[in-house]
Image 1 (tube, rainbow, N blue to C red):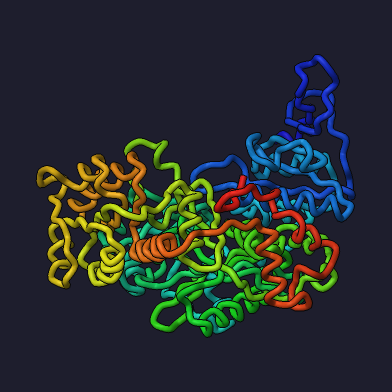
Image 2 (image 1 turned 180 degrees about the horizontal axis):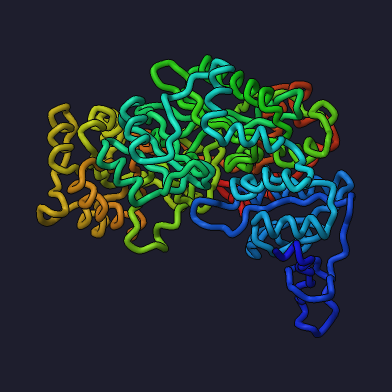
Length: 596
């Protein structure tokens, strides 16, 4: 109605000097006034849609991508127009873009900005799911979308279209279905088999995603978590228990695809990729499975006509590689892969979206890493009272850190230090795990015992470990009396917690144990894979002293080992800054390189 009446907002400069001096910073906000203070940049300008407010479920990884892209476009001679509504992110700094609009990331607001700016095009694939949802609406309004086409984005997001593509490419998927109501969901779940992973489509950070084990829980999910409709279908996948998960980040120019890195998740399947620690290169996956993932990623990039970044999530179970989802956009792991390898993926993606090819940019194929990098998530649990620390398919982290070393154990140890979860070298380990995890935890606890740790365990776990020759000290459960595990944590006897609950009474009991560990800064592991990694890290810390190198030194080691000609870092002026300055700024002395 506003448009029919010719009513549009004008844009005013944010007065950063309180009227005392003329304001020079290019910040704008919309207002229904007569005067417009924003001078359009026209065809010299490119609009970058940011990720919106930082919140749980959306870290600053997408902000990183937008910042690197903005700086790259400036280097290529374009003017950049950032649209982002969070004043606390780096992308809103005055020296990052030529113009910045503090506006909501909705279709209506973005269309108004593009109407004023008359820019060359809009980049939607660097701000996560939020701007991605605007792609089809912008295209329908005649706005050029730079990079991957909105139709290709829709193929990846629409489960029916994506399933058809995967089938055409011969890529195995977990049994799945798309439903629009609870009765349909029950039928699909019965067909694919419980447990199932249920999630709404087009959501960010795994919001409302849940693992469901029976029909009653599925009905409850539809009653409380989502409202399904033909416009908002719910996806149901068979949940692959005991699977290894992996992420692949790659960049493509419509003709050629280059793998940025293949990362293996350390946490079990079912933990959101944004919450799981991951390691680059993979340390437990077979090389044939990794090669398969590379091949599938390139096939998806070619089939979708990806121009820019692509992220593919896989699971390996029983010798079969399954594709879980394909995201033709920047992912949360782009900063990690870029810093670990020295190849600035977001910067290259921005150049590719303006029409450059990977060959013109001097981007070589993926090179082997002669060191190990571990990404660890950072959680806000200590600031949120009464929130359980147990991880699941809904993302809960708010940031991440990274550790690099010449071995997995030392890299994981550095990442834990950076995440404020420094691992102990002595003391007590409290173990309370469900029956399914007891065989898996046995060799882990045996290693801790052999390293001189005292082992505390609740009744069932203690009985299992003692029967297999590991001395343990029995501890009553919280609801059984005192002293209980929470008491041992408070008194300082326990320095590390390994806990995997199962069952309602156990979950309530273990909740108090995990909260006690959190409040008293005791590191805790809630998956067997994380506990095994922690054991490797403690062994590395006890057996040798860790060293410190800046990112540039690690890149130099990679070039030396692989040979200068084999490195994608050594060719092309556009890549040259990766050799001098780590992406995101120079590293500070210390065991890790923290990301702002």
